[in-house]
Image (cartoon, rainbow, N blue to C red; front, top):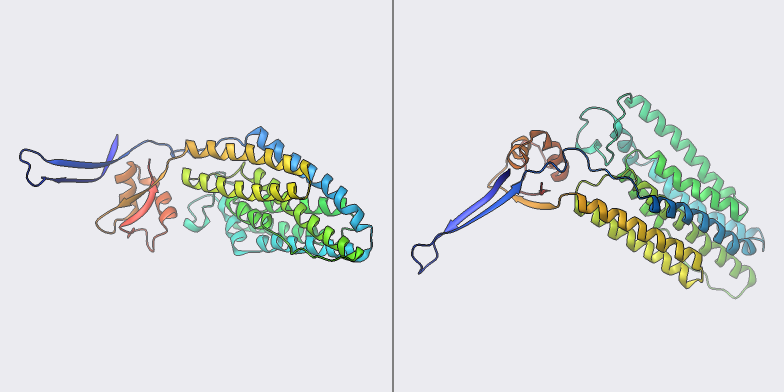
Length: 336
């Protein structure tokens, strides 16, 4: 079965007995009738855990000597870690986090509360999800405080891993998780160049701490992909490219500093995760441009395009019209 999207015909000049006809069809496959969901590849999950362990081990080797120079070095490392942790704290307290909390509520709560999660908790209420969010915010405040109090490499790496994982577990919507973690993975500090011994130790501690925090965020990104449900192949492909770029940058920086174990762990994680995301993209429909002569209600469009009026919610969320009864004349929709 197919829906005729557009058609046209014409008679070429100077040629008799010929009519050119053109049709655009949208095949009515139910690829999105149930959310496409595949399990996070075991290799990707294992690679993420390995990155966490190798990052902590490598940081201990690099930073321990620098931290032993004195309290100014420890304070500098704590300041970098706390600055990174504040990004996570802001993500948990952002309006997006509150909207994310409502994504598991049963019922139709509007286009802005749908999120990327397929799981709905039928026992959840507004009060319970907000109470859970409050608990998560308190836990995050404690975790960021641990970053500022960590006096050793092991304490700082353990606290950084805890912060990254709290972002992943506290935000209900996997899309919000990935947005926050990608921000954490982009964190960096300016390099300090000095010939003074204590200045060199501070520079080493700062750069090593920032790199370790980035790596913990990248590992949590891989684990967050287990619950993320892209709605089109374009969305999955866009994340694949973004994650690949982030991991390439982190791996190259590690290689430049001589940390071959980190480079190898990040490259393995990149390979496993991008393969998983490419597999997701291959199972999902593409986005196409739909053009109509004028505004049409979302319910009518869903029936015309997919022979399924319930797909109107997907159209509304994808197009974000001013009003669902007046969809724009041209918009992006799924190809099936």
